[in-house]
Image (tube, rainbow, N blue to C red; front, top):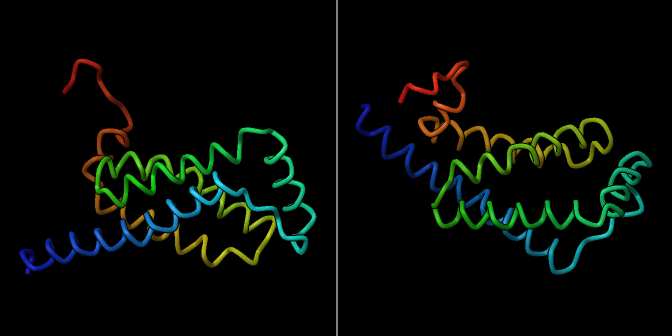
Length: 140
């Protein structure tokens, strides 16, 4: 039974990488080439937040570049734990943004968070050292 589950988990992780990598790379590319403007129907707090990000001059391009790079890493199956680590703050902020400021996008944000968590679980061995409570510098 365990022999059957490992290949299945590996294939599900590959599907998850593609399902998350394609939109992340796409959103990142679109954000760099043609930054989207906020729809006028957004709640006032959400509109103010996005306006503030836009006016920093660097925040939205940095988010787009991070999404593009992480999405490409996921699609290439290279440095997947790094890609997941780069995307984690974005997904946490996305959940909080939609939970607190604009509820309409909460369902897709939760789907992406579920993909992030499932891929992090599939690659949990790579995160083991990072998630230890204490690390002795002399220990390997």
